[in-house]
Length: 336
Image (cartoon, rainbow, N blue to C red):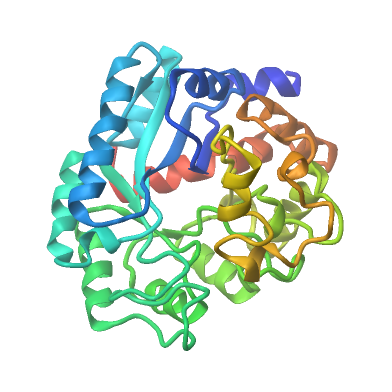
């Protein structure tokens, strides 16, 4: 079986996706053989009322495109979507500020379909600290302990990308279910504040979880524009460390998100909201070259499998990285 065919027939899951929810984007995603995405369905501001209004519009768009998309509540729902040629859009969030006023609101999120949450984003909140928290990371708070316990009780998957190292370590030690980093590369290969050290990679694997290797340039390579081969090097590094069952794929691809260069510059450009992460890149990091070379659309996802096969990964090993590992974790945490 050739690589392109394999990618089309295997379960391919993008562990973190933040592209706009439109029919055109769904079609590009399906064209790339991707059958499920963990969608960042709540964006700033994160207060509950605003989040629910934004979410209602996302739900309406997915419903209007029910012929090609659905919201999965279980691993089996993802497999059913695969069989029907649909895109399974997992409801997720990269911050739990939406339930900060009352952590019991997690019960509502779970009931309406959310399945993956991070405790915090870059900053500090009442659950713990993000990687850029002012004053450093002093770990999981008492309310954060309750957040972990309730996430486990509700069988919602904990994601620790963007979370500070001490807070992440506290969560990994406390959780009784697998924990993932949906989009976090190895800091040993790329010294970004958004990447994670080897001990956290090992700790996630020890829970039965995965680390999703991402293609967002600031986390892949700094001195020159990264390529798909640089991404594959990250995959190989983690597989050599924790084994083939604990490495996954999380594109973090904001395809067609920005309407202009000015919008990008003010958000995730070199002088944007997180210059500690984005300003350290070389002069190549411009609007036209802001994405990893060779991977500027989910329609190009088969190229990732090709890169893994070129590095000597077997077909089964590549399929595990591209989707099977996450599907296993989803099934273990969410149930059938």
